[in-house]
Length: 126
Image (cartoon, rainbow, N blue to C red; front, top):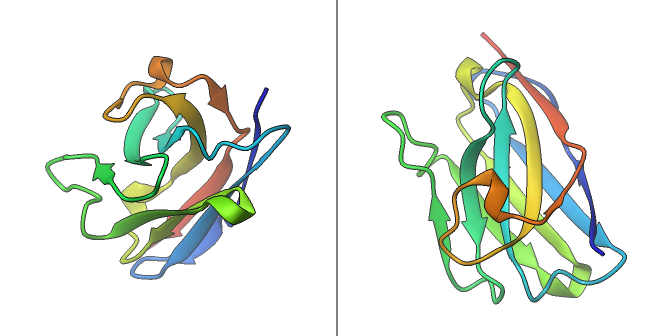
């Protein structure tokens, strides 16, 4: 069993930055692909980014206004932690952000991940 806890969310002005952390307990997730998702009430949970077990490969959502280029996912397996660095934040980035582990590399659907944190709220004001 893997327990995940997100932290680092909060209120930030448009154009600002935040770094989210996802810490694992119970067992290491060094052997798992780990992803970040976000969700707004009334909408589906949306893929943001993921990183391979080794940290050597990453992939990002490809939206019309993609988070690619603004967000960076990284991991430190020694600390059992995955990060999401978010720069140039926009009001439309406001959501609850979740980390998830257990997906195979390349997965972008929530149901493909086995373990989930409780989420951390990110609010971007204009």
